[in-house]
Every structure is written in C-alpha cells, then in structure tokens.
Amino acid sequence: MIMSSYEDKPVLTVEEAAKYLSLCRNGAYLAVQRGEIPHIHIGKRILVPRAALERMLAEAGQVNKPGA
Image (cartoon, rainbow, N blue to C red; front, side, top):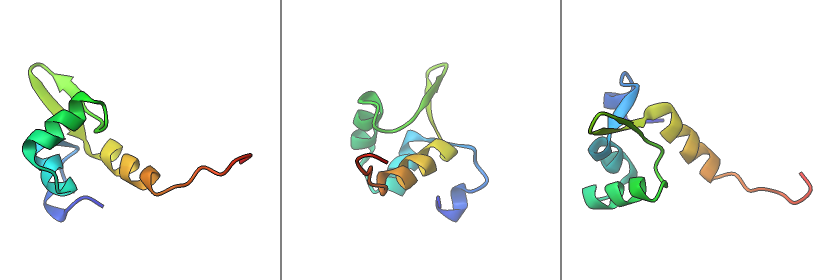
C-alpha cells in the first residue's frame, strides 16, 4: 500500500512516485518515458495514478506458470 500521506490522493506526482519507489527524480522520469511507470498526461503535467501504481507493484511479484 502507498505511504499513508498519499492514501487520500488518487494521483501522485512523478516526484512522489519516485520517493515511494526509492528512485531518484531523474530515474523516475526515465521510467515514465520508457513506460515502466503507469502515468497520464494532463496538460504539461505527468501524473501517476495511485491505483495503477499499486496494481503494477502487486503484479510484479506474480509468476506466470506455463499452461495456466
């Protein structure tokens, strides 16, 4: 779950997502550019939907089994 200070926010800035993921600011922006961090553009702002980030992290621990 996202840190408690972010629980009431439906979207995070890239900087907030970087802190949560223990990434540097530039690393987070590069990950956004590569499509590794889910994001949306609203005007010139780049925002990270909290639900999508939590889903991405939850799915990262799952292993796909052949034939499943």
